[in-house]
Amino acid sequence: MGTSERFRVPLFVSRMRMTKVKKLVDFLERAQRTVGTLFLIALLITVSLQIISRFVIKSPIRWTEEGARFLFFWVALMGASVSVHGRRHFTIEVYDPKKIKTPWLRLLLEIVPEIIVLAFCLLLTYYGWLYFESGKTRLGIEVPLSMSLVYLALPISGISMMVYTVANIFNLIKTIYGSSGNFGTND
Image (tube, rainbow, N blue to C red; front, side, top):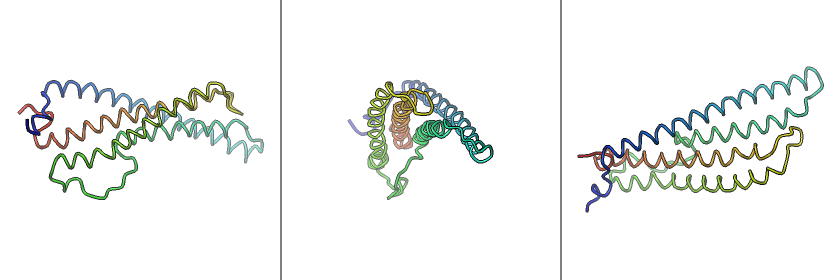
């Protein structure tokens, strides 16, 4: 059995499954962008309120600093997740993948960083869940909010980054082998 037979997937199966996965990934990204945008607006309002109360009214509102910190935490993690989907996370390119002609070598060199990101996402999800669990017994100092709600951003971000990374890996396989007719075609 040659390489092309090993990677061949019936056209209807790959299109049907990839369409459902793409819809899920697109929905997840829209949801994260929406949450991130809403929290960013709330962050801007909170920081503006803090500045006005501190420098104009000369009577700072105590909860704004902690509230801004909690909102920033969520905004940063939602943005990081969306960046993983677009493969805009930190990478160091030491070669031009388009110059590598051997599909399996190009695939290997493209997937290794994604596997490292996936391992990071597993750790983020696991330890994020531990933080979430430990936060159930604690409240914020100025904002009477369960810290588990703040820490919930960690496992949510980790799980969504895993979904995006797996989708990126499938897209890499499809792009590299699809262009040579070995993956996702019915020829």
